[in-house]
Amino acid sequence: MNLTNINTIKGLFARHGFSFTKSLGQNFLINPSVCPKIVPTRKGLHAFEIGAGVGVLTRELAKVCEKVICVEIDESLKPILAETLADCPNVEMIWGDVLKLDLKRLFAERFPENAEAVCCANLPYYITSPVIMRLLEERLPLESITVMVQKEAAVRLCAPPGTRDCGAVSVAVRYYAEPRKLFDVPRGSFMPAPNVDSAVIRLTVNSVTRLGAHGERRADVEDEQFFFRIVRAAFSQRRKQLVNPLSTELGLQKEEIKNALSAVGVEPTARAENLTLENYISLYSRLI
Ligand code: SAM
Image (tube, rainbow, N blue to C red; front, side, top):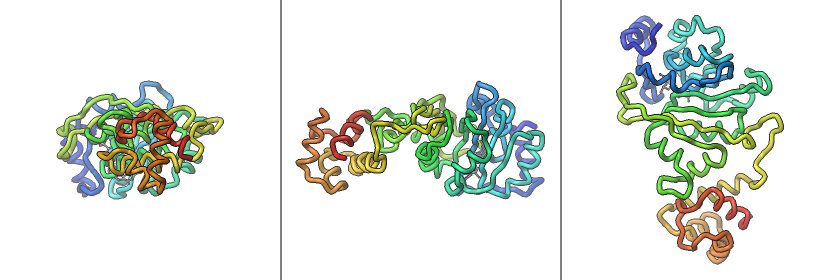
């Protein structure tokens, strides 16, 4: 069954009385060249997918992966997926909202201990950042996260801290992973076509931030909540010099912030986007 063929998809929709729910970010891939470039090249991995749609990526994952766990919120896709995934016994569908499920438990119950797992998804764009941050913050045992996102989001998520496109989410991503943009995907690759272009990015998760065999954490940031409060505070007024947003948001004296900045070698006139991840970590060490 060719799930990138428009007539095949239309036939499925007609047979099962399905219609798109725009608010769920339902733009299904119809460009046959995209999925093969998202799936892992290494065989035998365990895969976690978010949002099956009609199962176009799910089927590709099933071909190369040992097992595929896929979370889908829209139960009206059930009869369609029962048909399109009928010959994929290594796929398990979980029906629910990826932001509400207990993912740690799901991974522990569904994947064998120490399984080599990756996340691959064409993400619903309305929850791109919350999903990515959840996967990273929960330290799920994922080696990499390969996701299709809106092109502008790709730029932001992959921007190195210390560059103009960087935002709080770029610093957070770098804290946990090494991001890389893989390729662009034009809007015509989807049905229905969205109003924006997309890109596929891959976040290679740092081994010490994964809850791996030893469950290590980064040694340099003990209080991650406070670390990310500093990052969010800095970007809360990204055009202002850092001293102002940091003192307002953290409730600290400007003098104290200035001293901390100078101690870590950052100009008092610097703005949030000028600091590297290492600068943020040093600043955290001075302010904690
Ligand atoms: N993977 C398919 C493809 O590439 O054609 C579908 C991708 S479509 C962009 C996003 C999918 O995510 C839709 O099937 C949608 O129903 C599902 N979805 C939306 N919100 C979700 C949520 N909170 N939890 C799980 N799935 C969700």
